[in-house]
Length: 302
Image 1 (cartoon, helix red, strand yellow):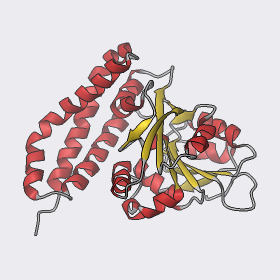
Image 2 (cartoon, helix red, strand yellow):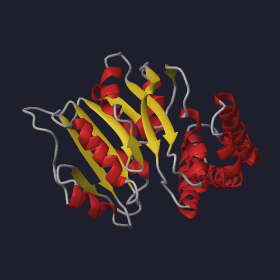
Image 3 (tube, rainbow, N blue to C red):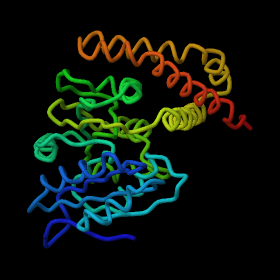
């Protein structure tokens, strides 16, 4: 079912909010209620691209009739869901997140205000829910430690698409990078090559909920690592790929060092980090195995 919905407007929306939705029945209602409250009376469209196996889609259909809901194939990963949503949205600005996050109550206001600057893309802060369990904390540290408050607003080369927004006109300039989904690393690399400015803004905040089970996140990390490894090796000579394969046992250690350094520097959530460390290490090994698989799958040079 594909149902259009946005605040009344005579023209295209000012802002499109594109939400990837994957097995989020525990958080989707809170996410969408907060967004609906903030967009009231504004020219804002909300696009939910869903391939859930639980009742997430049914909850959106029953509770949020003013939202554009796009069903997607079950095998699509979250970046591929974002890519579908961006392609079927029409706002002057595009904000990305997932239905596993609940925005702060000034999220939309801060996004619009931030884009008064010349930045092409702006990433925000990601905090964890106060009700999070140990698996959720391991997911959080694995994926989002870089965006834990506090940090100062700054220029950057990359940020998480789970709390990101862009000027549409600039995204259109790098549309070839989105041919198989919105993989933020690839999109941001193309934006940097085109001399576009990317920024991190601590005033734009979302709260991570219990997004994945232990087994689901292991699988997700492996698939994302595999995609990263394949893409990375496809742009370098064979001998460099061989070096990366030989060094791949160091990948979990490198990532763990970076995460621990960030957490210690911010002096927050240290107890949660210690408790979730065994699970976090498993997640990092899953990514590293996927990255190695991607290197090995790279086609040989002709």
